Length: 259
Image (cartoon, rainbow, N blue to C red; front, side, top):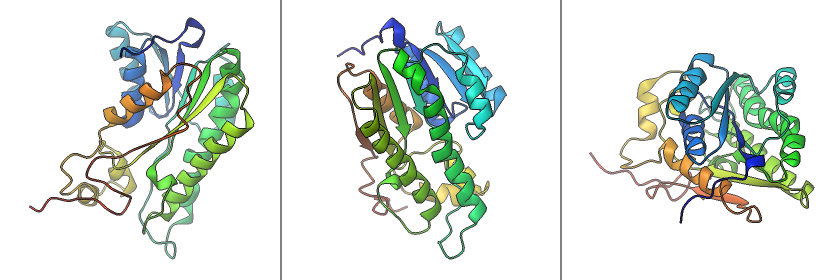
């Protein structure tokens, strides 16, 4: 079945964390689906290059450098729009894999600020614009870490649980308004930066995350899932979609092939 072209009033899609990984892949997919995409991230050069790529391919794309944890900047960003059809809250990330006993409180604070407060900032600032579209969608890209714990992941798990609960509560609070709330919770996704950032640039540690896993998810797998959920008919809400590679049964049960 072909992807439905969104109605004219809902064709602006804002994607946070669009400088790479799932965010960049989602921007590409939504542009292909007919949306005018607005790319936000802190790395200006990366989102400008992506906007140029999409424009050259005949799509509508605008780059807007933005730190989602800066509320004043987010509020200023929101004034650029009369209506917004889709908000993809993708900005986030993990730092460290230490046990609770020795975890760095600053890492925890940074993860919470980006994954939860950043999502809160964009959602609050753009909710009136989503309402005004008459057919808005808020997407929260959480994680399977937001639904189950694992050793060494408490800081990230706590932040992603916060993102999950934010989405769940928002859905309850705005029922009856023309805005859907979709949560997409990916499992093991191999991108160019996620694990590398988590382990402070240690390429060896980052590689071990995916060692022996034949086919972890790609950023495009998740982007495809997000775009599918967003492009369902307006009366259809995909409350929660958990997506994992076949090799991963849970956060702590992964099939790894012997070498």
